Image 1 (cartoon, rainbow, N blue to C red):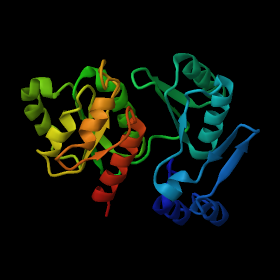
Image 2 (image 1 turned 45 degrees about the vertical axis):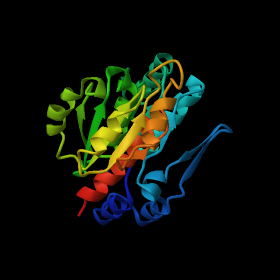
Image 3 (image 1 turned 90 degrees about the horizontal axis):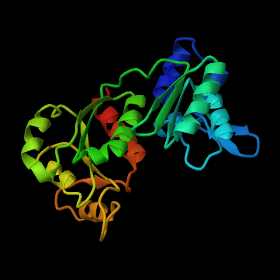
Length: 258
């Protein structure tokens, strides 16, 4: 049974005998909630309902409770994605996962963790390209990459190709032109997404990043610039790598699908 199963995946699992009729019906309903004490309600039907798996935001969560949420999610769904986890939170989660016989990998740059007892999802055929203006944009870009890959997409990257050295962009674009959708991360004045959207015939998602300082710093100028773009692009919130990755994966999968 594939993790993060969509409606079609659940029907196929029932056809193969991997799920009982009752279990398939429960998952297809898309309203599976598992209560953890008084502190959490796990939305285990999100993937079937929305096409996007439940993703746990670690920020502000007690490490013990976070570990319980993660292990229960892995037990129910096979895999669990955690974003914005500190090293201390990740260490405890990985320890608890090991005790349960699960694997867990912590990625330092995006501060993301993937816990698992099942293999990665099957590839959907969707291809997502992620570009960054500079290396300061990597945390948001890598968060987007983790999400898109966990949703079954192939991700191609071209980093540090911003407008300050625009000659870097054109050879980098050649390596990712087969992508179905582009995520373009930029801080400071946020120029790069508008430039890319004026060069490619695929959807572009602008990901403003909280680099930059002074007036309109911390991503505000980048967000405003992307919203004012005369090139056609969609824009997510500042540092919203999860939103960019999930939205891009939905588009790429739909385009690549049968």
